[in-house]
Length: 267
Image (cartoon, rainbow, N blue to C red; front, side):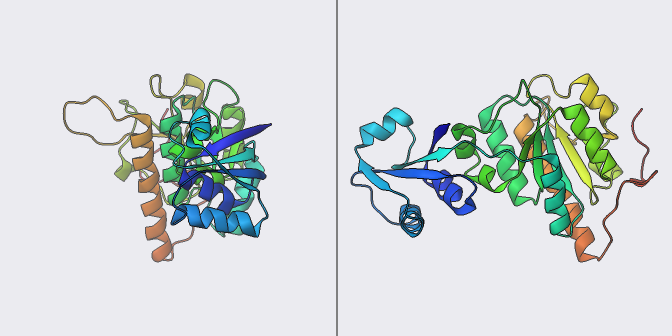
């Protein structure tokens, strides 16, 4: 199966990551071949990828926000949980994994992937059903970050169990009375962060599988943040905690009884 990746950053990062087969590049006639377009054409030339100059109308039939370039590519290469854990091991770091429970909106998904990539997440896990997949719209929304991430599709309850076996603490993001503020939890060790869907939040089975629930403090009149914003804030809180621990030379914390320390797992 083939699909079309559109927009300059998305095409550029797809080429740079090198995880998909790129069959050809479609370039709008008259496009100024500088900046990102120049880099795309350079990589295409080095890899002997055909470049076709076409009318803008042809690109607009593929997607209206093409930015003058489209790449015809193979489907997204999903990874496995074991590949995600091996990446963390190769990098000499405690695993840091993002789990998305039935997220539906491609824009929110793409935004979370972009934050996950820049905050050092080793991989992302999606449910097998009732959730957004990695589509060209998601690649564009993530500005190509999806191409550098290992993303797995798996039964989420089973995935959580496997991560626990590998030493990860599982923290669900939820604004509820049982959830605890960031300062009550240690976020600098082996961690799986679970973000729920836009409307329903965490499903009961997934919530029950979490060791802790995390809530973000808020002021103002709006009841809650959306999934992408809340998830991105939580990812950065964990990123900062991990960076601080690394700078202080603290060892990464595997899953051990009572390790998270400041509090006990929620009932």
